Structures are given as C-alpha cells and as structure tokens.
Length: 327
Image 1 (tube, helix red, strand yellow):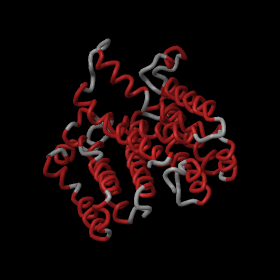
Image 2 (tube, rainbow, N blue to C red):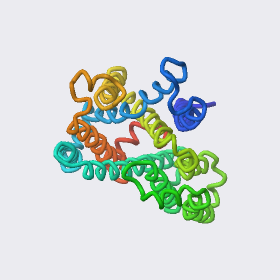
Image 3 (spheres, rainbow, N blue to C red):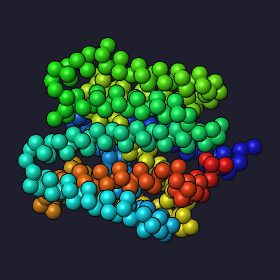
C-alpha cells in the first residue's frame, strides 16, 4: 500500500518529468515563431510565460520566508551585497558603456546562464538519488554533467553576438566536430557506471543522468531554437520545486499565492514580450536592459546559495521541505 510520502514522491517525479520533456517536444511541434493569434502562438506564449522570467521572480519568495530571511541576514555578502553590486554594475555598464562592453556582458551572462541550467540538472539528480537508492551522485556522475555543459555552452555560443569567430562557429556546427565534444562526458558516464554497477538498476537515476548528458544536444542540430527549449525546461522545473517549497509552509495557501505573486511580478517587469516596459517608458532604455541582466544574474547568485545542500543550514531546510524525498 502506497503511503502519503510515496504518492507525493510520484507526483513530484511525474511533474518534473513532464516539464523537463514537454518543451523539447513543443518546439518541433509548434515552431519557434508561430503566427500571432493562432493556437500554437498562445501555447508557446504560455510556455514562456510560465518559465523564463516567471521563475526568476519566484526566487523572491524566499525573502518572505522567516527562516530563510534569517539565513540571508547571517550571510549578507552572498544574499545582499553580491546581488546589489551585480545589479548596480550591469545597470551602470549598460547605461554608460559602448556596444562592445554591453556585448561582452551579454556573452558572459549567457555562458553563466547555461551553466546555471546544468547546475540545476545536477541538483535534480541529487534529489533523484536521495529519493531512490539514497546514494548521492558520484564524482563521475557530476563530471558527466559538467563536461556536457561545457559542450553545450560552446554550441550555443555559436548563435549569439558576440559569439565564437565565424570560422570556429562553422567548424563547431559540423556534426562530427560538435558530437565529438560530448566524448569526454560519455567517457565519464562509462566510468560512473563502472564504478557504481547498481546505477544501471536504477532507471530513474540513469534516465536523469542521460537527460543531463543530452540536455543541450538539440542546440547542435537545431540552432534556430537558440536557448528556448532549455530555458523553458529549466524554468518549469524550478516552478515545480518552488511550488513544493512554498506549499510546505504553515499557511500553505497564502504562501503559494505569495510565490505566484513574486513570480508574476518578475514576468511583468523582466520579460520583453509584455507591454509593462512600454508603459513605464523604459522599453529600449539601455540602463533598464542592464538592470534586467543584473537581476537575472543576481538570481544565479542567490539561487546557488539557497540550494547548496552541502551546507548544513540549507540541507536541513530542504530536508524539511522535501521530507517525502529525504526519507
């Protein structure tokens, strides 16, 4: 007989599986730019609306949580000083810098964004490991995903300005060359399986590992998609985690509503596809674009600290929130 924790675990895994795979299927089915007013257009808009900057805003929910606020106050350098300085720096660079400086900031931020995506996949693997065989990811499993991320970052840097030099971009986009960049990750995967034979007997764990290994592969064959499917999958995964975290508060309904409110505010202020920027008169203001870049980067900083389960405080917090995982 399934216990309540078993049901929660299955719902959690099911939700993560759906949101991880759905964006990868929607892009080839709907196209990257479906015509305005059509059903595919609204489906794609909903996909972006519920991921992208929506999930960035969801991070702000932690500032409404008393326990996490105490953690922030005890570590102001990471959670207050570093984010504020990052936002101030990008806003200033975009306001007074030339195009070269802005492009350099965007290129660096783009690489950081992709690294952030894969770090979340490593985090998901950690949760899967805890919820199945209770063995943490091995060093070889982590290296597999890290090496796959490096390949993905190079592939996706081919599609931005300033990205890789044109001659290098053409070389990287050759299937033989591009696929060869995954070889180090494949080797570490083989080493992970060799060092831990039980890995192949855990379908969910090996499936999560393979998902992270192949996460960026569509970028090699479908560069027109850019970061779209990866960003949508990442954002939706994060929303699943945030729903779990916010719903485990003492007053669950107000807590969930608070999370949805901060997420919605993030979407309205940061997303370029809504008219709030035009209404505020900052649609094309360089300083505001820099502010948006800085807010997204600050999300990377704060998020990396909150979910660092190697730290006793964060580990205890997340174990209480996800007691159906860490049983």
